[in-house]
Image (cartoon, rainbow, N blue to C red; front, side):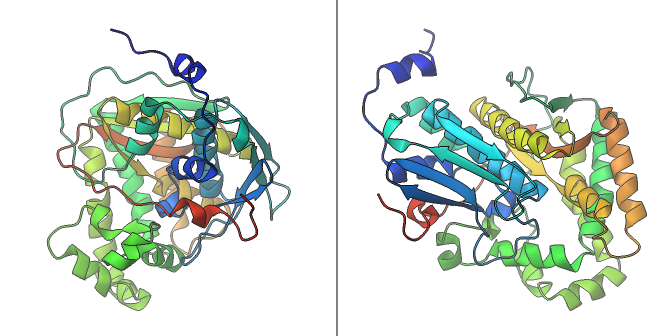
Length: 358
């Protein structure tokens, strides 16, 4: 028996949606290292969302950085689904402090269907190995304007993407700023994890003793010392081996214009929801994008430009990128062999800025 459409279900609802429940669902959107860099302000019936520094860990992107715009796009997509399109967006990257804003009127929003709530709440990252068997037909997903979805199932293309990621991953392990970002994002114990932000250490696929090793290399001087002995190469291989073994790698591609990055975030969330809903696990990879953006901005330590550029070139050839296109995100997809630990989220009231009325 066919399921009723989301639109048909919505027509049957009349109950208004509570603002905190709306925030709880919307902020299930993905963001870099689960940073959730968003703040909402409520004035009467109007609810406004803007970028907010993600609290107690480093944010190397800022309000208009690539990862921040992607995360804003994923949040926009969730809000659009929840409110049935009752979201107004403003994007103007010339305003560095407030490059984007979302406006919603919660009073006009009905409670979403249980099916939609389940889809949004079920989306998650799985960093464990996947089965090698191909998943068959992938779910359809419409890309937003300015975004291309490139699906790779051929072994040669997937291996090439793994090579590109390894080059950029090794460069990443040699950037002190990115090292600090990672280790201020990690959450190590129950109290830290319960706060609901950052990277729960239990979500990572680490070998026995891996957590102890990660704690030991937290100070940059130790990582720098080990890199001279080649640990960066070993870690970059471990970081990307599962990509080479993946049955499917999906790339989101487009220009580096702010609107296209935003639209890539919307497409990313739409695709991720569809893949998880089809029973497929998803693991995002951002190293090629991040290191490539840093290379173009002159923010790499000397000696790593050529390596990152080569990774970008390999990626561009494997994906058939046109002039001016870049990869916004790579997704490893397949059937999970291990259940993933689900990352927590901040309580919804923490997204409401001080002085917001209800």
